[in-house]
Length: 434
Image 1: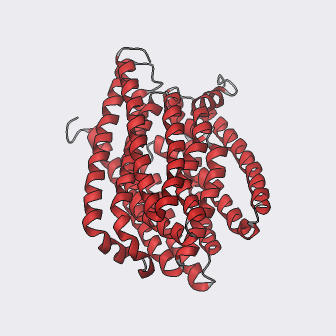
Image 2 (image 1 turned 45 degrees about the vertical axis):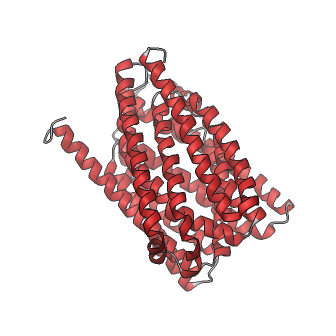
Image 3 (image 1 turned 90 degrees about the vertical axis):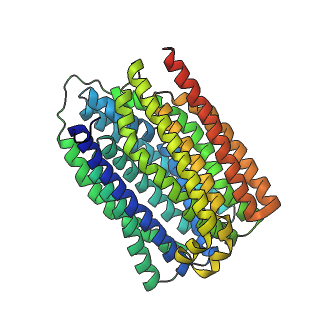
């Protein structure tokens, strides 16, 4: 690709928008940590983290049968000139997901009441509403990104991060300092972003013209078949992703949950977001190269790109680990209130875990582009179960340090197993056995 060519200029422009959006998003997330730690003590921070895990559980289960397929099939529908019916079926599937989320939420509320956690009902309810609306926001952003509307994605990514900062800071200054207030701030930010998202998605849909030859449920069947493995392994991945916090709640204290949540937001989340920057830029290109994954040449091109990105993610992880190792105290002084700073020495290991897991996610993206989500089932489920058991065992033995140890081991195991699945898929594609 020649510098100065139309394609290079287009990719450079897209890259600038993606980088700008992610920089704004990461900066907003770091400032938000400072705001939260200045107003909430570690115990309140822990309550917030636990409530958000329950909201995430509801949505990962309820929407996992739709969202992955909606992301993957936009480019296929665009290639076939059939996006009008794609939008119709995608909207219907998200509506089914919403009904499922409401049903699961009712069951969860009964469970909390029976478990004697009635004081959590208000906080968890707001967290679930936030997570449901967040699923719609994520889906709209995924579609815009697949359509390569980079400026729209960048706008909403940065807007969401900084509106959270503004609303949360204002509410915590004007009202009581409580976890419920924080989630209300998140929700107000999300409502504004969703309003803007709806305007832009209507503009995208207006470009499409209905095709009278489209079959009913044509895309919903494909989306569901593609997404089915996610319905299974998202339950287990939620267990793993939340097990460290709940293990700390069980064997340590809610204060430790809050300290761990801060470590995750400063170490794990930024690395994932920076890697997500590359994935946001590459995913629509990868999916367009693969098409419907039936052509060997297109699969090979997508595979090379995915492995290059994986190596880049690992290199970025090494740099991030070294920076955190030497500057963790300075980072905590800048972004965290004083009562949280004594755990800063654990930050490099959380960065390492975030980078290893992010590299595995890049390989997962490659398997998704190959239309082979079944290959992710065993790696995701088995490593998630192992990670969950390891979290509870390690926290029982070593508390907060044990949670960090379990996170690093899980991330390495996940990368190794998903990497082997990716290598196997590459070899199968090379021999034309896809």
